[in-house]
Amino acid sequence: MHRMHHFSRTQSRAFSLVELLVAMAIVAILAGLTSASIAGIGSASALNKNASDLGDIFAQARAYAMGNETYVYVGLEELNPSSANTAGIGRVAVAMVCATGGTRPYGNTPCQLSDTGPTPVMPISRPQVFDNLHIANAADLTTGNMAARPASSTTGFVDLGNVMNTGAGKSTVTFQWPLSGSAKYTFDHVVIEFSPQGTARFQTQSAFTSMVPSYIELPLLPTHGTTLVTGAALATANEAALQIDGMTGVVQTYRP
Image (cartoon, rainbow, N blue to C red; front, side, top):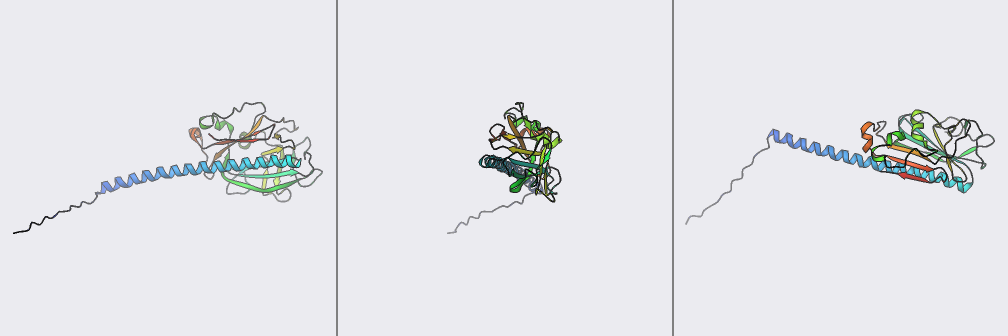
């Protein structure tokens, strides 16, 4: 009796060059989509943190002013990331100082706050620096994701974005860091005042006639170094707006 032996023949076939190239192309496309998604998530997360931290700084300034019955000044300056004290895009320095005597430390003319004179100021905390952040024009944030935020036509509205980007209406109350000697930072564009009553003000008039605004808005965009989102891409960009109520000094963050 003969045993029957069954053999299975395995056939193998190598991928062709065309198939390999197609597979590599698909992998590259998927990797690109994943990287873009991760970068977008990272950008949104960084903007959330920066907006939250800035909001905390304003809230601390208001609390300090009311708790110590004095005037507190928060300066913001946008800089070139590669140069510590050169105006540019992509890095925002923030510092806080307060009046030592409980009275407003300036008169009716443009003033640089200092640690000397009849009404000196003193630092409250060391400056903080926010990288990959841009103070935008409010006009850039009127469509797309930001269109639903409160209208910017409110009486007394102060658009800090335009101040930062065009130089028009710069703060007439300024200070440097440190307060005397060689300056590491110069805060001469945006300086927000919190009073002992908790009101918020942004002085732009040479005669200091600026009224307490309905609110002050600080529009923010993330950057990649010095690279900004512009044009049609703004409609879907990661954006945020910090709004400070002029009468109460309360800070709110708007994120679409």
